[in-house]
Length: 464
Image 1 (cartoon, one colour):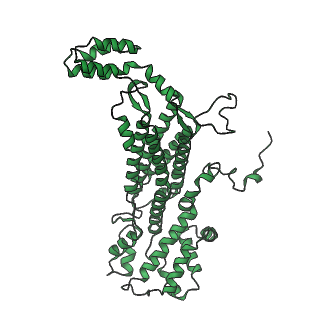
Image 2 (cartoon, rainbow, N blue to C red):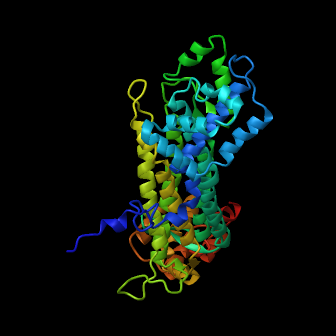
Image 3 (cartoon, rainbow, N blue to C red):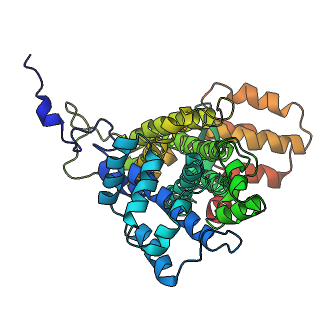
């Protein structure tokens, strides 16, 4: 076999990318890049460094740094607002020399602001008293804060809304339930969609409720350097206000790193939402297999390379697969990140670079499921035929009414009549006519059908 030409693979494209997130699926994940790419991380570090410098300059108690003019404050804000990929490239070039990413940003920032005399007079207050993790942990909190609010939750909300729409549209369409895969008390197709919607809504509330935490307390969490510089200053109160200005919760007790417990809580909450959706994908796959749903045809699409008739539920399968990948990464993150040897080790640093991987696979899964939901068309005839073949599901209401009126051994009588047997409408109604119950109850049971025995299913589906 001829060797592969490596020259063609040195340029990164969607075809040469090692990960499908940056290859095959790159176009679907554009919204994540601003938050979880290395550019996004560097930009958030810059936000933090600039905000810290501005906060120090605004504290009159700190001798050695003067308040900045309005023009300088505006210039500092523009450094963040105008930050470009070429700027991040310049920082990466400095990193090649320093072999330290946060220090490279500090040096770049000093170069970038070298023309401003006010900043240069206070240049050593850039990164003042900070360990790199002070910058990084707040930057990661901001990445997760933005990614959760702007990408992940909107993706789940679109799914919940689609399930709500199906719940309302299909609220009155009776369906044979299948507990353990066997015929069970009827429901409606809409009620089953409402169940998924309700679960997703609960999961979204849990995701949104996780407070992201950050620290800014130095090398081992005790403000050692801060107090060495200004021993009488209230650094804890000052840093609390600084962190809370970003909408992040202040963590007063840490080692060198913020211990990542809140991150773990967030990742577990996302994984639980993903598990709900994985369950929904499998049920929808089964409903398609049973014929309860048909799939709208897409012109030119091929289901099988050899079987022309096939219309496969590929969107739900794709979603299920990517949810598995997302949860594998999320669970590793939640299990690994809260663990650090003594006051610091670097095992979290490389792992944290994969936040976008977890979010990326989740977003792919949400997109695939949403696309699959858009293709679904219920088949009322198939649903009715299933119900009409299962009159034995009315054994439940019959024996319940028998219990009410004191008929002996109602469960056992219905078990003998129905268990493991096909029961016809005529056979069940003949049994009902023999019962020693009031005539009006006998009439009510005789009028009942598998497609009318729905309890509150319709009401519940419409209420969601």
